[in-house]
Length: 219
Image 1 (cartoon, rainbow, N blue to C red):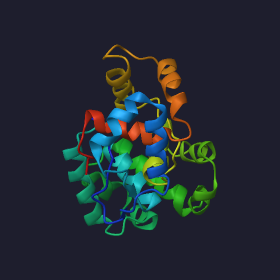
Image 2 (cartoon, rainbow, N blue to C red; image 1 turned 45 degrees about the horizontal axis):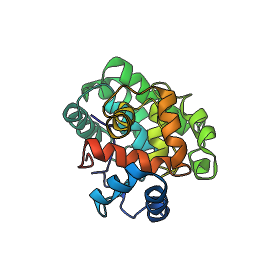
Image 3 (cartoon, rainbow, N blue to C red; image 1 turned 60 degrees about the vertical axis):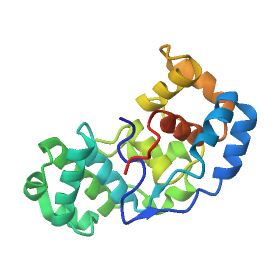
Image 4 (tube, rainbow, N blue to C red; image 1 turned 180 degrees about the vertical axis):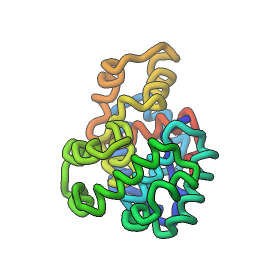
């Protein structure tokens, strides 16, 4: 229901608490009466990031527009074909082998384009830590199959950026509707207005709204 690659069952998952998490919780609870009620309900749970940029994006592409179960099945088949899931392995596997993993023709093209961008260094993954959010998004959306929402999920779950507000995420909009508007429909401008109070910790507030709808982080 929520974002496809929430918390990680990946071997590459990073388990430490994001460095800003505790400060953000305290600030949000001081400023926002909904957060004051919501945050304590989830104890020590926190955002868990995914370590490798290429793997994170590849998994996101595999999971687009299919159920988590189907995405897991396709992902495990892909890892049999490309055990290290490197750009080189994906390119070497080629379209036929990727299709045999259960990927559609379009997703196969997306995966090869992603691998090509990384292999040819048309994206600067080693510099993303130093780049601001919009600069990273601008690079990512050049890759086929990656739109703004996928790029924002990457900022949250790979780069652990603290102030991302993914307005295209249905879970965020639903969470604001349920918690702030008694279930009434919410526009993007409503969401922006509510989130102004969360700066500079909009990622953290978003994560707790996801939890309010789906208490167990998705593996």
